[in-house]
Length: 367
Image 1 (cartoon, rainbow, N blue to C red):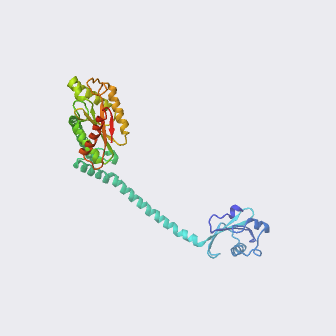
Image 2: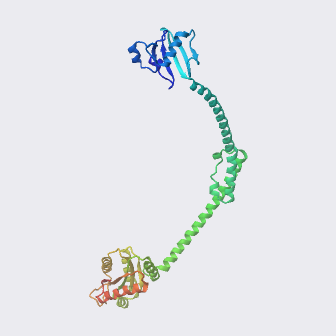
Image 3: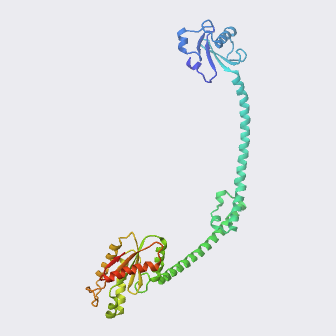
């Protein structure tokens, strides 16, 4: 009974009647309600659709099944089947409007499918024309344009297999590829030659710059480099200190040990300073040395460390007026002020250097 009266369409109704028109089962009545009453008759169940169907079974009898009726119940299409065995009647009602709508929709669907098929064929034809004719010709035009612009590296990767080119189009593309490859090879060779020449020129410029900014004796940066870097430090507006150092009693050293020994001593002291600080060390002039020190450094501590390193060299000097018998450094440092000029900065650092000399030499004085 559940299978017979199960709704397969929302607006359909299923009814099972016996030969007397009594209700055995229905989709709009629960089976429990029917079982409780055994059967529902036209006298006990006043539902209009049931009343009409019950009368129809009693009056018509239906000698042949299945039978389809469209005028017996207003607005409904009836499907009548006889169930073998008990001889019951299974009647399904469908709203006639829905059936008519389906009869209209189906031809429209067929027409729509036909139109869609035509559109699909046109699209496939367009796609084939694009693939087989338009795209290959566009590719040839594009490659020819790139070759005309001397853009060989973009022209060379255009493969005939990429666009499925055939015949003369394929041959034209291959010819362009060959030309592009040859031009690229020649261009690469020229670029390598230019790169090699440029590297040689850069190396020559580097050596020239080194000659222009390096001191020939000590290998330190020279006065020209010092002036350049001091101006840059002032222009940057960042806090720096300028340190100027002088080798103590160096004239007496030169006079008694000779200029060759003096040059050797300056080189040894220069190397000592350079190897013990990452900062640039300049030969400011004669036996004077200089450094531009960022204010982030612990200035006095760093300068005293360098001064001690020079003492550790223990370069003998027995003709000094001090109580030491080796070469030493006096250092003076002063801050580089905002909107300063190089003369003022050097003058302040010199003032501290003279103070170090007056303080007995071999010491550091900072402002």
